[in-house]
Amino acid sequence: MRHQVLKFLAAGLAISVGLPGLAVAATAGAKAIIPQNVFPQKAMPGHTAVAIINGERLSEKKFVDSLLLLNGMTLMQKWFQLTLLKQACEKEGLKVGPAQIQAQLNGVLANIGAQKVPANQRMAALNRILAQRGESFAIFELGLARVAYIMALAKGHVHVTAKQLKLAYERNFGPKVLVRDIVVSSFSTAATVRDLLQVKHDNPAIVARQYSINRQTAADGGLVAIPLKDTTIPRIFRSTAAHLRMGHLSSGIPMGADIHLLWLVKNIPAKKVAFSSVKAALKTKLLQVMELQWGQRELQRLVVQAKIKVKDPLLAAMYAELQKEVAMERQAMMRAKKSGAGTIGGE
Image (cartoon, rainbow, N blue to C red; front, side, top):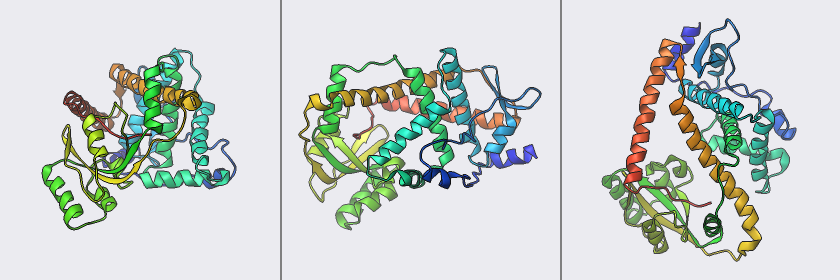
């Protein structure tokens, strides 16, 4: 039976099932929502391990059971990351458990509440957001745990400077340009996009969803806010955005192997907010972002240094292929970084 399940895993099939009790929990407030039914679990003595991470045996039975909720490669990658983060926290004497993971969910629900969503509707709103992103609650659940571990590890490792605070202020309250950023990989596609918008006058949002290879922004019609005083964004982006005219598509902006085409939605003037009145809140928010960035780098280091042995031959072969893909992506990112490529966007 186990190998039959692993054949489904090799085919990359993701079985979509509901989460029992989720609808009830949504109306019962934010208590005990995280079921942790896809989290890694240690193999019991005498039981089979699916993998061994720095000497820690992970339960194959729990892994196979969790395949009902997640695709195999996604599950394996998430399990390995969480196990490494848990080991790092234990080494530092840091406590991360259900309460800390639940706190991450409570923060997400509070952000949804800030959009004037009633308390008893926030879980439903969260599920709609996840559905729009094509993300399951199980993936989201693992992501919350990952953030909880990362934030615990990162405490005290980063500090906010006055320059960073000022930059955050300009990013949040300075002048912006809201654009549809259509990212394409070739000049021929750029020409197609230009023809659709400038000649055929198609809907820019639909064109962005169909042609932009940045799937995260494409889902929202390519909408991106470009803070004009954010010096972390390449000058060519800010300059191009500042000179956009309604109804005209920008020239192609090369970024690494990609080409960005900008379409003006509206200009957003600076907000009349005193720096002193938002300084403390900005510092808290910026510190969280910097801690998360630090933690992401630390996780990459843990993965590189980890001793990982996948027990099942089929899974081992799939993991080896995954490692090759990760290595290729890392090399591509390094090449893009050397060529001056970057990302744009604002908070």
